[in-house]
Length: 141
Image 1 (cartoon, rainbow, N blue to C red):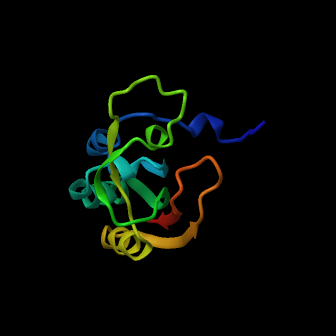
Image 2: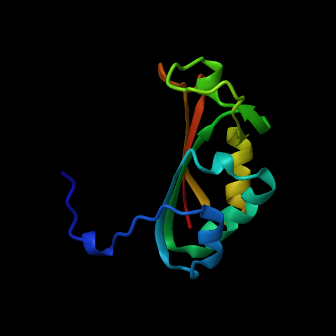
Image 3: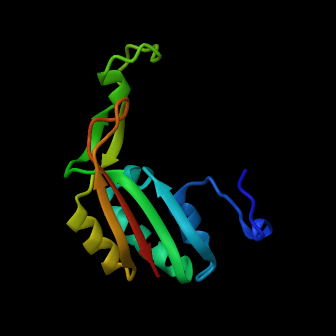
């Protein structure tokens, strides 16, 4: 079990990221973890989101992001439906917005927002996951 002497100072939020950041006080957040969530933000809003992340991070605050690798940005059919996953009980076509990134694009956009990229790793998908490479990036204010 994870224990921290700082447990009273940790708060986990699960909210609409864009709205939350718009309302968050500057220099008030220690770290953000965005696992496969920014991929659903329309591309024209991503740079502003990165700027808001930088604005709201404390000095030396961290931003960890993961995403799928690629260049496509738009509506895509639900991967589980494409794979004919038996748990999906609908014949209706299911789609969602996805924003893939490539390493250099992501690095440029995050640095343009004023964050320093500390680590950028790309790795292949595991069995049972969407069959697309993944990117993880760690940046600091």
